[in-house]
Length: 530
Image (cartoon, rainbow, N blue to C red):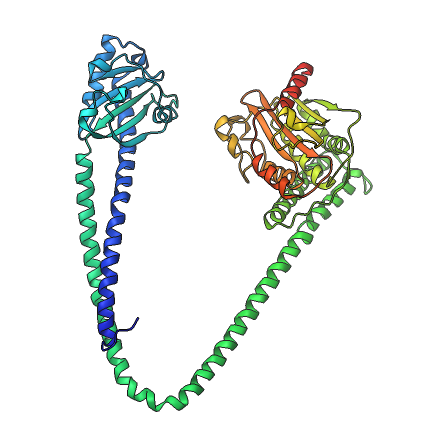
């Protein structure tokens, strides 16, 4: 935009003034919601900490029985008297059943109201802060409607380190102090913004004025260099093109080196462990001479550790292929029973050492499916090794493989009518997965935080890899777990691998699924034979 008759400096002053005014107004408008959110968050944190500190000092867990005894009422009164909430005009203390066991409004004591979403969040150890307008038609706020608006805080009350919520403290405070605090901070910010913008505008104006004066002085001189200017531009353009060419060559070289590194990692990273594995097998076989007991023990440990390292390298490389989209499925006739039996044979030393009971249920007429046998072996290795690893000594691991013609009829997630599926279930009597961690079980590098499993080796890659492989092969995976009783992983695979948009949509929809009758049937079989 140009203004005729105005110098560069004058144009800058005119446009700069408009821009800085608009910027100042915009920044000021952003402050209020940010400050409100910040102050409410501070109120939330302060309320729950202070309230639970007072509860530990004045209250007992039996005080939350309804109706409250006279001694409990006295303790509640002392508790409320020590609350330091500005503008407080109403206090309600609820037990877990939604009954008001104490309130500064006697008419409310003993009343029970339906549990609200905010109350349920408080029972889940979440402190809730809301700015609420009290509706006189709502029986819950019949005594607060005269106040019009208030800040409502619901803080869960616990005792000591226990995570169990025994009650909920609900307080109502006037919002006047909150608005005054926000206004004071907003005014302070506005002043600082204005001062900063004025200083910035003045500094930029000085710079532009000096630049404008310099440009004006140079205009006469530039006219005399009109002829040489074209040559200078051409020279600089050639230099720039040369520099860009060098940068492009450099970028191509970096890309080539990266590709070479990935290729090296894919083909050579596994070579040293494979060599160690081969030599260890030769030594353990006794072909080069008999080993004494100590040598035999050390070599076996080397062999086991090296085998774990090979598996870890393979997992990382497979995950890299998955995330880069280069993991290919090579469908071949695959016998899932043979794959499962082969993996169980590899796990035989662990199974014997832990005295684990293995239960197998393979239907006799199970068809050969078309999928990638190498990928299926990885799936069985992870599911079965996890089941054995996380099952206590003398526990039970069950594996079943069967076929169903109408999977959607029994509630299998991601199934479609008219398709035949093979189902694989792996159950154990292990420690189970805590409920609050089940939604993360297929996350990369995640391991369940269970005291009983902390000593168990693992990287958190196995189930992430299994889920990615199953979905890549057109199937679905889900699980059911009960802490202290064990876990069941269920896999559904089509008889023939096909990659269609509909399959992708079904996979996305079936990332997590409810309990199906197939899992119930397998559990019944498992419990019967256990």
